[in-house]
Length: 360
Image (tube, helix red, strand yellow):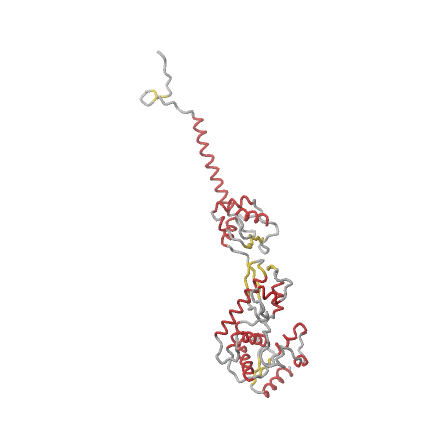
């Protein structure tokens, strides 16, 4: 009889007809499953760790001097990654692109100019790009500045792209949407937050629009008895008030004096208009001959308001111009401490001049 080779037996002693698999094969199959899982887990842990680590930036980048990167409009996620690496984020663009794609936000990245400090992690970087959190800078236009000072501040700002360099004032006004408008006094003094590398003209456009809005708001609140006929006249008078006093408590009284003079046809006789008419010829010393030399801005030789504003007034001066304080005063003189002495008669005024001007 032929013998049968049994592969094994069951607990009852009967032979098993199912052959047993060799143990090395089982271990190999298990490894084929386990190793990829372990590698995937390690990659996931490594990826989570990388997302929270500061990205290496070019050496000159610091908290005080952040790395600036401009993402052009219409950039794909791959272009964004390439731009970041080329601009100084010292990480392979392939890795950055992989992160953008993995996050599911690759298509949400917004164009603009961004700044990154050495503590920026991949997660922070993408969050900033998706939120459109662009780098902002401040530029301040000061109450009482004239147009030359305004343009000097804008043109000298290192945070702006100079698109008005070499342009005339008329050309600038046309560029920002106000063709044919005299630029003096047309920009509201304030601090403006703008995107780094924004066009210089964008600051002027914002300031011009802000002044237009403020003048309209002030004009709506005007005293019905005002001698002013138009919003432009309010702006002109406000600019004179701005240059005459910086004292809040005196603004409406100064406005009241000018309103009284305009009603009776008396010349305003205010030094700031004469100084403005002198332009760059003014050397800080206003002489008698200057007061006697007729120009379009000499309020000693001409009645009424000058043809344009002479500076940028703030909101307080605009409101003072349209809502002057009721007063019988038609004169005032500086006391030398920032305040003014008001007088109703020429005799009182001459006494004030003697006290505060001639006897200092």
